[in-house]
Image 1 (tube, rainbow, N blue to C red):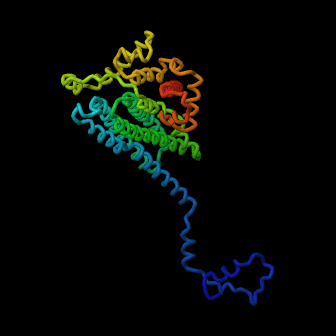
Image 2: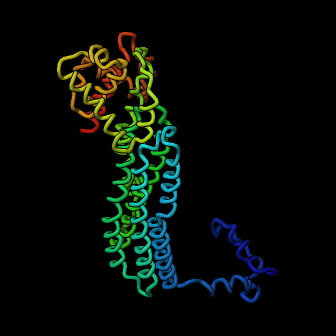
Length: 369
């Protein structure tokens, strides 16, 4: 043999010993050993070394996972940047009435981040020990989840509630989109918190995680239904209606007063207007009569009543037949859209925009239980 491995290459071509003919016996002295192969074989990692490497890799991964999960710096910066956009002239900004709310949100997140930074230091201290106490780590992560998860769920709820509050107002599309972006960031952090707990539990129980385990964390179906319940009413702003009402010119005094609105003033004025419509409806007035009495557009009055249907205070059956409502929702699901125009186009002319609005509102009431 004139090269290392030549014997192996020649014999490895055989599928069986049948037909093998050797002109002479193969001498072991003629088989050369490749020094590089020998060196590699001698450097083979032992099973003990591999186990230690796995443990160290696991420790490093958990450290990185927890550090990323409980690092709220980027999230806080998003909220801080957003809060700065409220600092415009009051009469020119639809956000200004909500500046106190945004400020409190940032203050709460800042406090939460302070506690999270302390927790990260605790995790690093536990993982830096020669023999990592995974049980202690699990206890600390469970305690952190109990503290931080409700905090971020509260942030998510506040953002969604604010969207519900403002979305029927004018010129708020960009504002709503910004709040949705913040809510998505908060929800992402919620998922991260749940995932970190799941991984720690898996390590302690020495069990293998499945794709299903991780997928269940986000609960995509429930998430989708929740967002629908918040966003569907965005299409109930009645832009498809043509009713009009006399517009009263605002005096300079009234404009000045409005520029000084606070969060509470804004919310109170909207709630008070809806309640007036609701009370007139309960007194037996029809939608058209309420619109005349209040000198408002029919669509505005319908918007007030849609709110009470969506929240379950009024029954949708008062405004649209149950059979029609069922067909409207079935159609919306079939075309995968809850936009008024798209639903109307998919239905026959016997369905009105008013009926579609109240049918969707009734569906919202069902989703919210």
